[in-house]
Length: 82
Image (tube, rainbow, N blue to C red; front, side):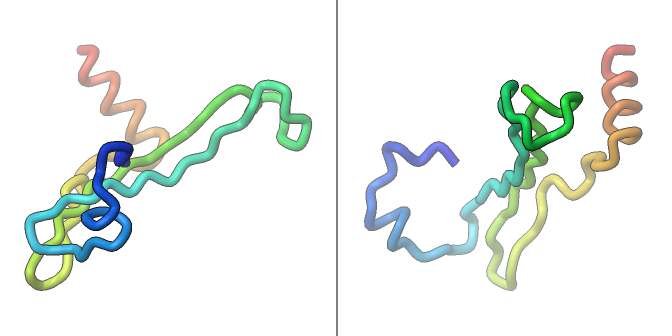
């Protein structure tokens, strides 16, 4: 996702090949002064990343085993803080 130094021919016009890994990171970011969203969401951002390995037969989600739901993430973080 940080492709500032990528050469155009390898990035924009490149072809995916087995062994490459891509990060997919959908996110929501709300400005602190954005009156179009509820006040409790202003000034926060939420992003969930997945890393996909390109394989000969398709792809493999390398981060598939990570928690996704808020309660799962909170429980996981609590265990890490132990």
